[in-house]
Length: 265
Image 1 (cartoon, one colour):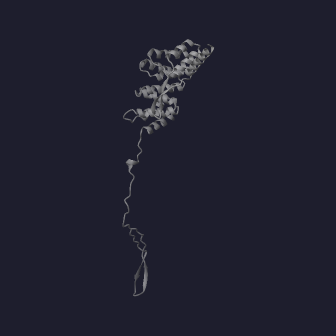
Image 2 (cartoon, rainbow, N blue to C red):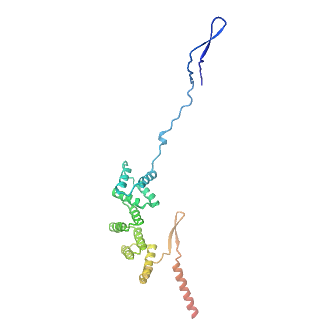
Image 3 (cartoon, helix red, strand yellow):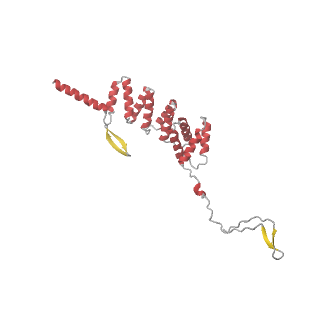
């Protein structure tokens, strides 16, 4: 870098050998750069922008509806404004937001979001109905849950999954509503839907509680406990033999009785 400075006074010669200093007016110092240095680098704007994916959008949706009141018009208006600029309905974003709300146990918000989604004609799947039914039950709205159940039962009579029957039977079992339990269990048998172990256990407990031992024996005879079950170990589905404690006790009692009879003879 070259730098030239002009002094404020310059020496001059006047009158032979005598030197005299004649002052000049001051000149501002000027710095002249001979080299411009390295080329400045500007930030690349197309790489600094944050990419907005479905996870960040779902988090924004959750934050958007959390601070709202329970007024239907306010919630629906906020959801409409959230999806206003979308070319297609963001079904994946809404599903992920529902998963987040379910983990945080925000049942009222789940009900509002699913009803808004269904009003748009989107997300009419068994998973959405199952989440809505669970949220209604957890929120204590049993009448609305029964209304939804009856609607699904009429509309999807032959294709309704077994998990819906299990959910309603467990709800009635917790509330000691035995008559409705018997109705749903009768519908399952009529439609040929095999109940799982939890349903059989609940029905057996109710039969024993009501002193209906003949029906309890028929239930055990018709649906014996399984000898094999599938379990997932390190991501693999493995068939494992089940050791039923009741069967073991019955076999032990039978062997003990046989031993006593042999000793008596």
